[in-house]
Image 1: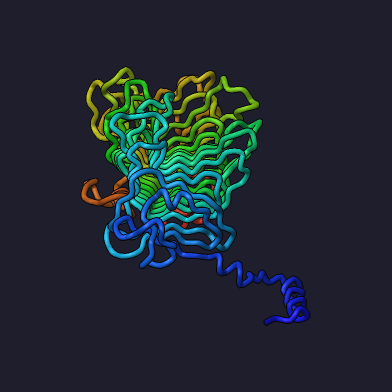
Image 2: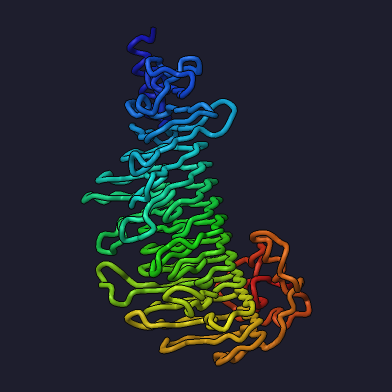
Length: 521
């Protein structure tokens, strides 16, 4: 028994030294709960593998406390919605995981609710190693695999979704109806809410309609309360026809090492979607991602810096075989200044685009420039990229760059140090854009209406490997390194420094870089 004097002294010393001491009673509140759909009973206490709970109904009735763990037995199935209650604390998250051997525990929503897993108004949760689906007899708008929802909550800290297999979610294919997604993280209500430290990593999202991963936020600038520390990395999105990864209302989101591929042709004519793109977000970094096979009837680019975005950086990515092209940069000039500040300061550098831009069906057939700049976007830099254009059919858009009207035109757009390698005739539709500058680019092949470029190189860039086949993913860029004999060595314009090339080689400060994505010293 601790006497009162010593207890007082202990608490005083703890306060002086700023050491946080958890009481024995607090520690006793940290439990590990087990769930086994085969051998469990809801009448059990759930706190040992030999006395597990059985159903989601029992789990959903519990309120978990900081430091708790909720473990589902591997190789078991659960029908319905998993809806958790309670929040963790900093350093003491609540963790959902699996135990035992076998396939990941399956949470099969069966379209009974909007999502198979719901985290509503909670924080400090880590969810990993679950198999999640939410498939109904008919598609329905606003259907999700995982929904992390805030309503009049304020700031929710530390939500981690890791190593989840999310698949077969049949939401609506129409965005205006409400769509659907593998993962939706949303903020709603009159009290501004946001996520602080939201991580989605190592997940697979397959056959989810309409979209992959959506992060919603307070997007209007007169109500700006952005999500912070959003990280989306190392996820596979496959068989998803719509948007792949879209952060909305975020500041400094990091999106890296994701793959989106094999997008089916399912969206109705007129539906717009693209691979990875921010909307109404600041300081987004999109890097080391691969997007391919996008077939949306409108847009369908691999990457996009959309309206109301500032200081977006798109770098070290691989885009290929996307029907709508490699890149969209856009801004709606009719949007009011209270809700939108336009698109400003986008940087697109050290990316590889191969065989992008070949839409030949639907009402937008014949429009698929490799780079589409729409509306009054400002201060855009596109440099040190490689664009490899294969032969195109006659009914396919031959525009490499198209600057178009959206209640205004682009101003101050720079294309520098790029390699435009065309195996077919390509055009440049620069329209009424102002201060559009081309500098130190390599143009190889047939370039119709080639823009004025005082330091242009019209010659073979001399790639190290001539046949662009056989290498998977980001390794494909190895085929587009330039040799020591390339006319592009040390012939580029000095841009923002310091920076590294696609392969991590340092681009020396103050010295002319090579042209393309490879710094050949």
